[in-house]
Image (cartoon, rainbow, N blue to C red; front, side):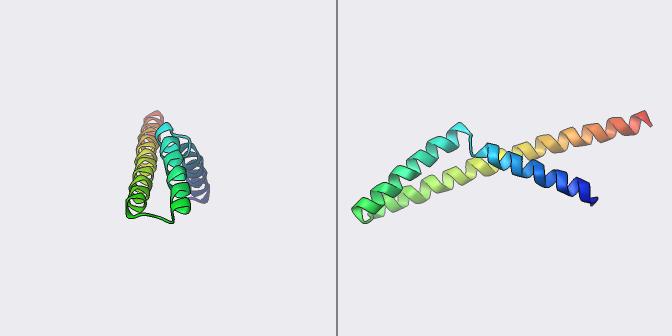
Amino acid sequence: MVSWIREALLIRFDELSAQSEKINEVTVLKEQLYNLEKDLLNLSGTNSSVLSLIDLNTQLLSIQKEWLYMKGVQDGIKLRSFLLQSEELQ
């Protein structure tokens, strides 16, 4: 792969990763995780709290990965469309 394309893809991924942190569902889940972590520290941890913490963390990661995947698909479609159009112009 050409180095400038690799660099552009890495920059795009970093930008999208930062944006994924700001998704409404992610911020809500992060707040819930933060509150559960505080509860665990204060209560020295119950099984219920630990399971809830694990579940919320799994939900958070799933949402971010799904969002990043969809953005990657969208970028791929745009790039393919651009390349096809540029081939037609030649």
